[in-house]
Image 1 (tube, one colour):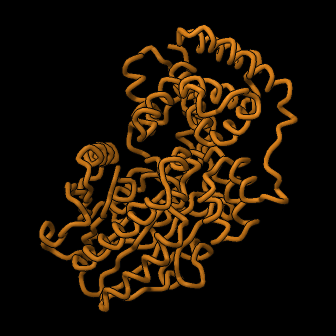
Image 2 (image 1 turned 180 degrees about the vertical axis):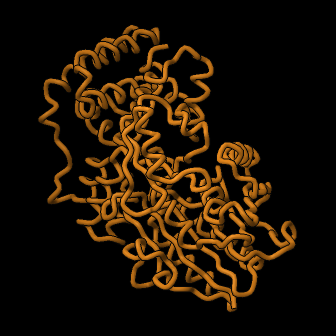
Image 3 (image 1 turned 135 degrees about the vertical axis):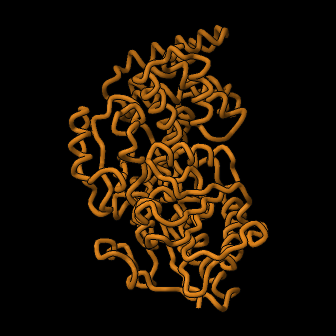
Length: 449
């Protein structure tokens, strides 16, 4: 299977079974084990590129077809979208190659009309690609921002309402960028400077990030990061800088008991364990057995033995599952993920306003359950990877009204000095992609008295 065919197969399967693109890609690779690491990377670039700019591509296609867009066959549209991403955003791919490969894909569908249609429309777009008409930014700014930056209109309106129109446009642009690969040095095994040197010996460019003391930005990687010897030896974990900072905001001490709710793959669990020097107890709770299996694999690779995984639903009667209170709780709440769209651009199209309302109810439920498990004078950090006020500030306000024994702490009094610039006047931790050049995260710290 050719690389573009792999990308097309994943996009087509997602049309029928929406979900995690990574899962669909893994299935496609399992069926085609001959796919090289380089081909896989190219396919991922194509898939994510289509998700980043799908609405803009569809706007362009509408201008060149002579029939209703809704009558176009979904596989043909995906062929055109893959080609348009190469034509508009991949300088190293000649336009002729993008067109020819798209025609081959259309022919492989077994429908004679499709190849001629694909050839004609793509060649026409190539000739006129500098003359594309977008909505007028002066008379219809919201529609223009939605189409040009390729976001659903409801999300554009939401961000304009929360940030103002100029900041919202900068955010739209920032979340379309391909993110840096950031890793976290495993402080139980290696110093960051030594890890940078080891990575350079493997032919990888590595530089410290601006804030997190364990963070390293990796460049020039020629294959999957998990093929590096430094990874296999447990010297680092892949984790964005904003996520790394969150663990330092609650900063558990050696020997403490910590609960990581909605632990997922365990990026924060393993970081908390490292901050504790591997001494104490980290109970990692998640509803997914599969994710916790991968967390255990990461713990073993990193040399961490103090993590205990528990499969449970964090929103339902936690106190009946966990009988002992904890010194520290980190709740990485299930959220819309609007702060990490650069990493997961499919999130633009898989979420809507009803999801935010549903997730907000779930976040409140989990927070209320977690409060009962916190020791007196214990601390709980509520974290999301979204920049939605409904899921952040409004959830905090509702939680405080329902829990009179819990108080909001000003993170300026607890954050490391190097993280103070991310604490706002309300005492919340907030990072914004267009301001700080990292994922959009939110955190609030609570104390039980």
